[in-house]
Length: 287
Ligand SMILES: Nc1ncnc2c1ncn2[C@@H]1O[C@H](COP(=O)(O)OS(=O)(=O)O)[C@@H](OP(=O)(O)O)[C@H]1O
Image 1 (cartoon, rainbow, N blue to C red):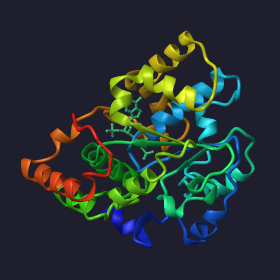
Image 2 (tube, rainbow, N blue to C red):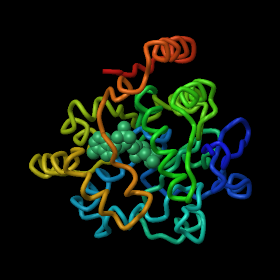
Image 3 (cartoon, rainbow, N blue to C red):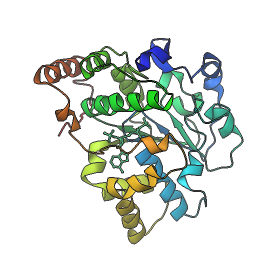
């Protein structure tokens, strides 16, 4: 059994069956509010890390008393969590502001208020080098199936091949990333690289606070950065009351791909990267 067996394709995008056509049909008209904070990402690029940091910032700025668990309880905008009775967008519609809106949809399937924003909404896009993203997604796929009482027996070699062929959840990776990257000059958007966050989390938190237009003093920002390292966040995630969140913190490093890729697989990925992403202005760090 592989994750693809419980997936379907919509306009060339591979989606889990918990994202339905009915949802995708209404998605363009989902009402985005001025004070929403949106995280739009390809899976496994640091979405939950960023959400956690934003939750801490909102609480420090006095904008909410809610825990991160509560803020992200609706789950993905487009999906119905295994533990939920309705898709995220239905729950979010009734939630008070400020809302954290999270989606893995490619830009062409996202609400118009995100893909063609007006007013004040802020959209953060985490990005991560595709080799580490692929490794993280490979392990995650196995956990999702396990959660559903199934076993994923797809070997890494086949998964790596599927990744560069676009046959993974929310793939093709390159189309997803390039779609959102078109918005890089739009002031509503902030692009954050996982590797930059790992290398200098304090600067990343400062950038996020400034982008969200909050005034937090230096010790508060420092405290948020310290509390958001992988080691300090792992316990929170592992103890989350949301089953899906408990599966997130795995290794949290740059370069785990070196433990999975053979030299030949790495060469094939490099050739794919060169063909699809070189010259686009997106510079991923693999080390
Ligand atoms: N604080 C912190 N520091 C560094 N890395 C972190 C942190 N929190 C989460 N992670 C790592 O992010 C990966 C999960 O990404 P996502 O949250 O985007 O996953 S998901 O698509 O929403 O399921 C997943 O990466 P891998 O460890 O490589 O699998 C998590 O471990």
